[in-house]
Image (spheres, rainbow, N blue to C red):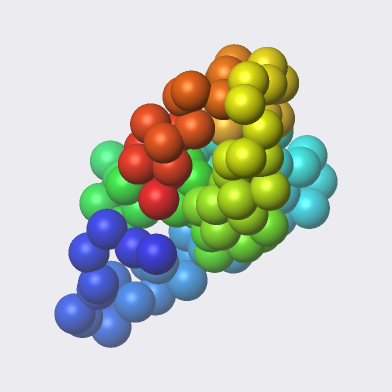
Length: 112
């Protein structure tokens, strides 16, 4: 999901470049090591340009690896929502986010 939809051919090409760069980083390093800085460098644009089209790192993951993006988080939350209290490290959300059963709704709101 992009933050803004490009309206010009130049913008569409830029989103394609960013997406291709994100795919390359994901294939080489995986979701945990995909950074917006490296995506911008590989796409040949500024990090501001990446954020113009993709608001969060997880938005890039939505495009290149949906199972590690928002949909993956929603699926995970759906599977553990009924557990009264659980502590686990949800890898793939940056440096790791520690969540207990009572914080799942907050996590869903943040990444949904």
